[in-house]
Length: 194
Image (tube, rainbow, N blue to C red):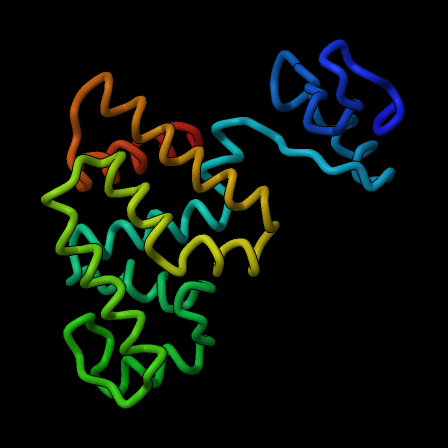
């Protein structure tokens, strides 16, 4: 019926107009398999899957580095992701040259540009509330384009915007700064994996 059926508001039915609800994500498997076999685009909305998505982890690593520019593990994650675009070997060379720091001077223009981007947002972290900061990052950084190109396009962008909504909801329940939001996200991820 997609593309042929007319809805009450006058537009034709699209995949975005359709929702399948299941009692638990564990019962969604047969539906997901059927949708894949027929090349029908879909998005699974479960918190467990959401916090395991690579683009969400990359964004959280980016936020960790913004909150703490000395977090070398998060920085390595950012540099190894599509945001930094380094291979394992290139990341190893960055470490060997002593350049695994947002404050390091590097002859590599892409690395220096990535570090400048991180420092720009780090300066805003204490000035903006969490929702405003995340929106600022999504509108003023290379992150959405890098993630969309590397992962699943619009679906990836929707996941990044969903993370902003999650931050907004958590901040409404209990105001939080960037560090607190990251901690709550990590706790939530740990609970889901238990």
